[in-house]
Length: 302
Image (tube, rainbow, N blue to C red; front, top):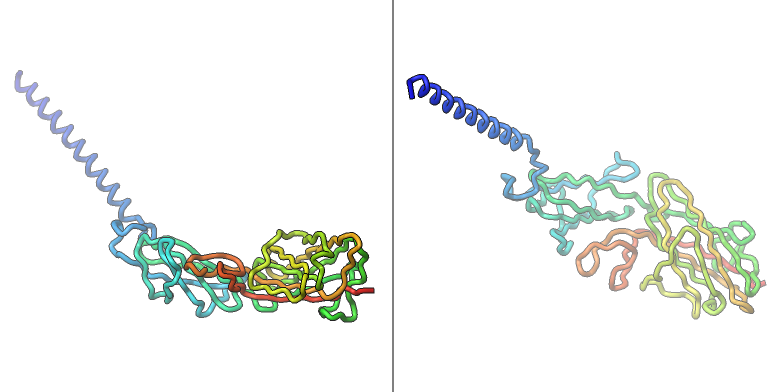
């Protein structure tokens, strides 16, 4: 091989080496850019984060009025599906990066709610909207089968349910009126008919609702009474919801006397095993509702 051939080979080798070097430097540069632009909040593993823990800050506010902060809510947390029992101080309490954290935000006159997230690198600001729900929300009124609003008095008042014949079906409209900037929360509505009515009534229905279990904490007021419970969707804001109560009587059985109706609002709560549940009663029968209300009326005997 002459000198010209040797020189060409050397130049080709140098060119290939330079090209590979440029490609390697470019790859490393791009990789470096990607790593530098990764936000700390996107890192959820300790291996990728310079810190092992992150601070939890909870921003609790009214769902229907976000400018209204929820002052000093009670914050309780659990990690990785464990017992929810850790008291949290917003802006101070820390959790390990990568931990699954569940936080219950609770406050009187609000529907308590649980939130779950994975603690990111750099800490977490948890946006926690909860519904405002004062104790008189919703208000309830019931119309009799003639379409007149009845007196809220189990012993009877100016307007009651008129006498109903044996074997007939009658309907009553129950109106649930909400309050502006509040929510009633999902409701359990319990109706207890007069003493001995368990044998008088063959069926009770409520439109727009589903059948619920009568909670363990509810104690019947009348011996042998018919007691039913229903799940009713929340009334949000100043909306009004009307649900028709339809009662079918057994043949040859009349119905007369006082009728009790009670409502209870559902919310998230910590059950006896430390887990988060939703409803109005825990697994031991203890009440866990936020609010309660009632409306009672009389069915005339004649």
